[in-house]
Image 1 (cartoon, helix red, strand yellow):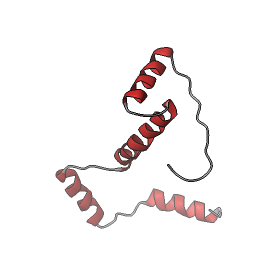
Image 2 (tube, rainbow, N blue to C red; image 1 turned 45 degrees about the horizontal axis):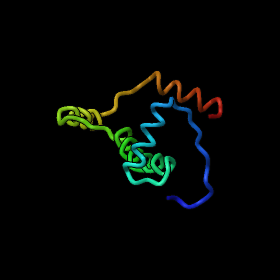
Image 3 (cartoon, rainbow, N blue to C red; image 1 turned 120 degrees about the vertical axis):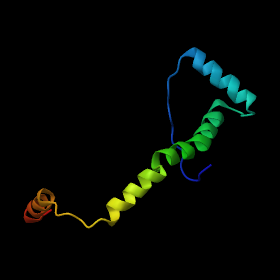
Amino acid sequence: MAAGPLERIEMWVDAETKQLAERTAAASGCASLAEFMVRLIRVNAPQILQVQAAIELTPAQFDQFIQVCEAPSAPYSRLKAAAKRLEQEGF
């Protein structure tokens, strides 16, 4: 567990969900429901965040992406005009 001050998390669940969590915590060898919940978060959160952070492309999509990146940039007059206005306004 990470060092530092502890913070509280509160949640309300129906009786059936609580009983399921308590039974599962006991079956997992956890001393408490809190230990079980922390274990679930620590094990599952990194995987969930990795899925959200990763971009997976097919080979064809990757090839198309590279083509776009390597193509000479076309002038984007509206974008350049907007950037110029922002610069004039001090952003």
